[in-house]
Amino acid sequence: MVGISEARVSTLISEGVLTKGDNAHGWLLGYCERLRDMAAGRASVGGLDLVQERAALARSQREAQELKNAVARGEFAPIGLLADVLGQAASAVVDRMDQVEGDLRKACPDLPEDARVVVLRTLANARNEWIRSTAKLVSDQVDGMTEDQEDADDDRAPE
Image 1 (cartoon, rainbow, N blue to C red):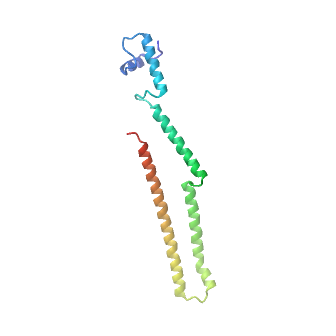
Image 2 (cartoon, rainbow, N blue to C red; image 1 turned 45 degrees about the horizontal axis):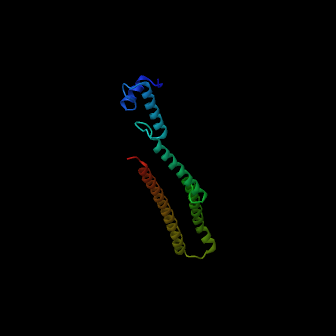
């Protein structure tokens, strides 16, 4: 009468949706009430909770829009792009520093060798420290982003 199998009727009886021994009209009313509850997101026994699913979808849509807004304001760029730009900048600085020795010989041919070595050593130390601190900064930022994402994921996890 309600268009479901005997197995489904047994399941609905065990869930208390249908009453054993009730007439077809009672079953139809019970079954329709169950369908209305499911459509409204109130019936979540063993299935998806529609309210939670809608909330998760809304949260994802909000996060996506926040990301788009951050990109539009220039507050965000993909990590790959930032890494490429930083790598190109580092390469340009290193190339310029490598040219200092030749430029120094041309500009100051009378500069004592000890002074030239001190200048070049100081530049090399500065270059190495710049590379080290930049790598550490990037690593710390990526670790921080990973921790923030894990914290956000933990906040969303059902308890």
